[in-house]
Length: 351
Ligand SMILES: [Zn+2]
Image (cartoon, rainbow, N blue to C red; front, side, top):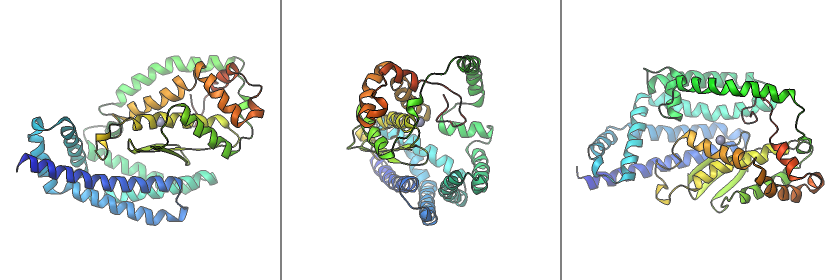
């Protein structure tokens, strides 16, 4: 095989992979944001179909031969192609261990579970989601065995999110945090609580949506390349530097939730918007790792978004959309209110 021909063939494989991935992600985002509940079955079937095609193509012997050839010549490849070969090879090695039928069934399960989870939440009825959740957990334990049977299941799964991170490292990390944070929470709860009452009340969703749009402008998001919609649980998805989708969730009685979720997701979005043009369609697009991504969102949410200087920029926006509430609130009061700290069972609300 000629190297140039192999590279050409590999780039075509990337294009096909990207097309399946792109279509699946559009379907997934549509399912979380705009699609009606009854669409779930058809969408799950379609996503499974794409997953089957992706599995088939990736695990095909000719893909294996192509990747092995390119891997042998990796020193002759440009930096991006070498990285792409590494990523696709890793993906193929992993995918080859998962039987196609199991992989397809899992993709279908995830689409259905998204709907049962939402319904269970709306009706406050865990039994609606219980069976799907049990299947997700048992499938993941199985997947962990496929990924790396020498590791504990949690470590094998953790490696998918943050390479080489282990529960041992994390346990030590959290033990150290606990030593400082638990006494701190007790100290805070013994003191008079900061006043954040003006952030609770009645805040019409359309006004909160306008505020979120202003918050996006404030942190420098280019709306030609990024949109904001609503979903049950906020997230951000990036197709490329020119197509980033943010979501948020509005609670009419709680102003800070959507505002800070927008700023948090905005941090994720800015990271995705900063991807290089040449990474469009490449498996190397999308950031260095999960922890790197979360560092960006938390930096915007907490280090910038809850800082005293930011209050001078935020307060005029709040006064624009909720003049009655914020006429008598100054920047110092706002600074204290958004930094009020209390324990919560909801992860995104917990400090
Ligand atoms: Zn995040």
